[in-house]
Length: 194
Image (cartoon, rainbow, N blue to C red; front, side):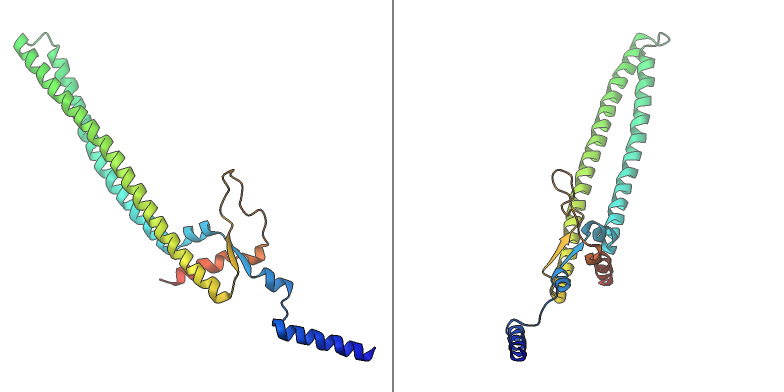
């Protein structure tokens, strides 16, 4: 009996030596950790800077649009005044015809200004959307690179994003143990690389 116990112990030690140190269940679980990438992205200092830059551009476009709207409103008022004068019986026929021609020219100007404002809005929106998309992709690539490097140095098997949803609008990760959430560590890490 005493010999059998020693033999079992020897087999166990030999097995551990052959396959490396024994890994407990928690170590196996800690090889897979979780992160809320949306939170990391939102709290990334470069995201805030990119958002500020996009807001500045949007404000410039808004200011330009405001000037154009003011010009449009003045042109519309001028058109209405000319149109009213063209119908006035206080003026002779030649003067009314002159005002009618001026009103038609002013109406063309108003339509051109409306088109210019519409194009500005469409072009500006496309440009801001494109810049936003490119900035988001660049920042997400940076964050993913930092996370990959972090995972490699920590020996993680996987880091799973908990912020996503499926096409049905349900969370892609139904449950995870919060003690394996490394979101705050990642936020600190990405913001330390200034």
